[in-house]
Length: 103
Image 1 (cartoon, rainbow, N blue to C red):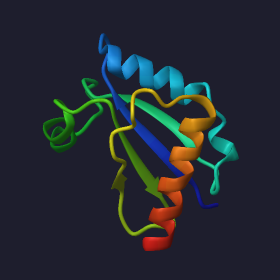
Image 2 (image 1 turned 180 degrees about the vertical axis):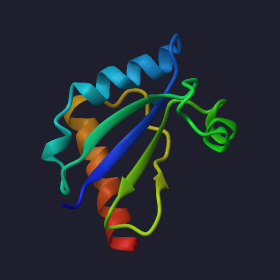
Image 3 (image 1 turned 120 degrees about the horizontal axis):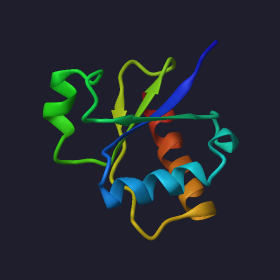
Image 4 (image 1 turned 30 degrees about the vertical axis):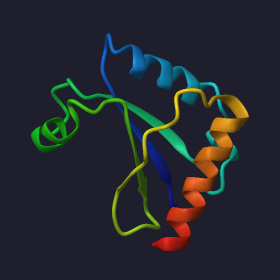
């Protein structure tokens, strides 16, 4: 089964991270085309590889698209802070359309 995942690299105590987490959890990512599953990962956890920590530790929150249909992982641009609900869903769909058309 093919699956598409948004990996949200986050951090405890980061207000930007917590806000984005809430926004992402409040929208129906399964309504996107293709449907997306959200995985929230604390960048400070021991399970996160050193190279990922080194690359993203100062940039969280970061969303990475991981897809069995794409040849690589894709880091999404920073989400505009005022986007939420349907506008956020629409923004994400536009990005997905670009990535799946391009790769």
